[in-house]
Image 1 (tube, rainbow, N blue to C red):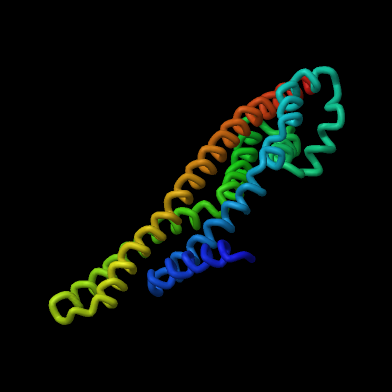
Image 2 (image 1 turned 90 degrees about the horizontal axis):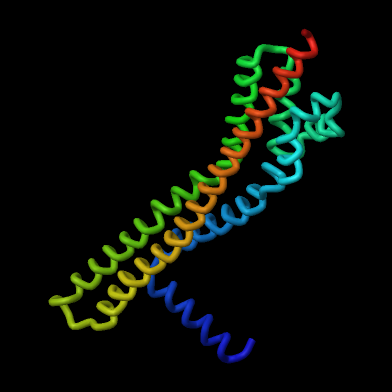
Length: 218
């Protein structure tokens, strides 16, 4: 590690040290946010929710049923490696019931999948809320220190410490909250888009299952 790296680390250390103990929970919030973002990137992959190839095959499921086979789709549904496969499996397990009952079973399973997709999102919302508030608390604490020393004594060191606490905690809180808001918005949009895609595909599956059973029993 050369002198420039040491100087950079010293600047970072001084920034956190001057911010006071409020920097500790703000840093904890940043670690939580980073961990959740990494988790969401891994679990909200399109290949785990609505794979492109499987989605294309599901779109043609009515044609496959009319031709008398699913070309291995049934095995993929049973394996349940993706959210779409698990929901299609629910639809086929209930294929002998009325279309309303099939839709109700699929919707119940879909709500469970949506809950799984939203795992971690409430924690991001908490970070978004409390990180700026912790920064404001640090700001208030720093200002109290400033005004407590102004007029009582000419202790420029304590006044400087108060100003540093006020400014550094505000910057740190916003620095954590802003990217977390961006990440939260991105993941929300991604979940919404995949949920809509699942809804469209499952509508076709339940309709095709009902139509296939009707024609088979006719």
